[in-house]
Image (cartoon, rainbow, N blue to C red; front, side, top):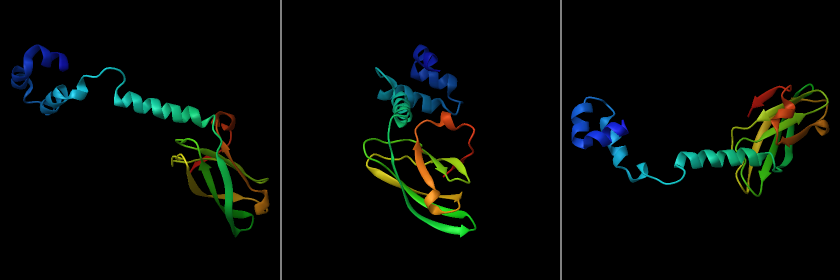
Length: 151
């Protein structure tokens, strides 16, 4: 509609398209200083930052530590672990949870922020807590055949 706005001018544009719900919003947008910009838009910059976070996740190391484990019955444990990132953020960190009995990948919906730690809880089948291991996975492509869960 912007080309029509430029051709007609605001007054004629309002007369011709005034019955449309979006007409006032379009005119506000066209008059906005943000409408004219040089370089990348805010949306482009946001996508670029997200892309850098996703790419950077493959190159980063996260400190993962098991904090506690509680028995939930025969060979089943609830494990609390902490993941910390010092130098930069990771958008959706993923972890391999494994024991001799079971292994799976968990995907976090929480961003792991710079200089912060996130705590997580997972359940796993294991004979003893000492056999449980948790590690950060920078690249999920190696684990396509392993079941995954969101945490």
